Length: 526
Ligand SMILES: [Zn+2]
Image: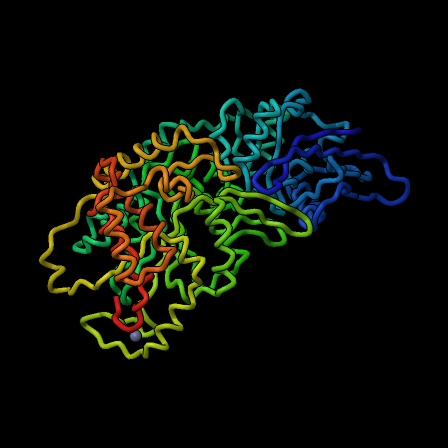
C-alpha cells in the first residue's frame, strides 16, 4: 500500500517541503529497497539506519520490496533528517499498520535515526517549522534537542521526540504526548539583559571606550591598534553590550542562520543577544563567507545583526580578507557552487585588531621596538587599502600599567553607554526614514551606510569645521579616502551630542580616528 509522509529539506536559508512516498509490495524473487528522487549519500544510507532501528526496536516486518520516492524528484535532498519520515513511511505502507491516518496527513517529520532508534538532532528545525506552518501542517515531530527552536513558531504543535518508539506509540494512540510550548516573547526579553561581559569591568582606556561608543552609535567598523596584551580583544567582546538590543525580527533572522548551521545551544529558543563571532586567523574563505559540499553558512552570516571580530588582522590570508570586501559593502553574500546558488544576509559590524608593527611594540613607551621602518611598512601593507577603506574608525590602544590599573575606579556600566547609543540611533532612524531604498541594500539605517551623495546632504560641516578639516588634510597628509570617513564619523559624534550642526570639536574628534591614514606612520609612530 502507498503511504505519503510530509517532511522538508534545506535549500540555503529556506526549508523546502518534501513528500516521502513509500510503496511496499510482495517481491517476485528478492526483496529490494530502493530510494529514488535525487538523494545524496547521507539519504541513500538511510536504508541501513532505518532497518537497523526497526529491527532493534522489535518491528517484525514481512519480507517485501520497498520503493521510496522523494518528491519533487528534481530537487537534491541532503542530510540525515529524512530518516524519521522514511521510517514512518515504511511502517505505514504495511497494511497491518495502526497509525491514525488523519493525524499522519496533518503531520510533518524530521530527524536522524541512530541504529538503536534514538532520534538525533538535525539542522534547520526553525526554518522547517516556519515552512510547516505556512503549509497548514498541524503537528511537527522533531528531535528532542531541536524542540525549543521549532516551538518558536506558533500555530503548529511541536513534539520533541527521543526515540522511534515514542513516535509510533503516539501515532497508534497507545500514548499521549504534550506539545512543547515556548513563551517566545517572555523568554526573549528575559534573556536580553543577561549579556555577561560589561564595560564597567574595563578600567581606564577612556579613549578606546569612547571610540567604541561612537562606532556603536553610527554602526561604524573599527580597527584597534596596540601592543600585545593591552586589552584589544577584551574590549571588543564588550561591544554587543552597548549596541541597541536585538529586535524580535532581527533575532528571528539570526536564529534561522544559526539553526541551519546547527549551532544553536540545546536550550535556546531564540537568540536574544547580538552574536559575537571571532574566527581564528587560519580560517578558510569557505568558513568565513559560507559554502562547502553541503552548504554551511559562514562566519559573516553567523555574525548577522552582530559583531565580527578579526583579531590580528594582518595574520589573515590576503585571499580571505579580499572575500570580505563585497559583503561588507552589500550586507548580503551570494555563494555559488556547481550545485547551488544561495544568498544569505550578513549585516555585521566589523571590529579588527592589529599590532602596530611585527614585534608589537612600535610606539609603546614601556618596550623597545626592534623593527625597521621597512618592516613596519611591509606589515602595514598586508591589510589592503580597499579593506581599510571600509573601516571608519582607527583607534590606538595603550597598555595601562598594572600599578596604575589597581588604583582606578570601575568603568561606566554598558547599560548607560547603550542609552546614549540608542538616542543617537533614533536621530539617524528619523533622518533616513524618508529616503527611498538603496537598491539591493535596502534601507539606510545608520550613518556608516551613507552614500557620498547623502554625505553632502546630511554631513556638511559648518564653515569653521570645513576649514579645520582642510587644514588637517594638508598638515597630517591625510589620504583622500579619509575625508568622507571623517565626515561620517563626525556626523555620528554630533548625533551623540544631539547637535544638528557638525562643529569643529566633532571634526577634531573624527580626525583623531584616522591614525593609520597619516603619511608618516612608519617614521613617527602613532
Ligand atoms: Zn616593532
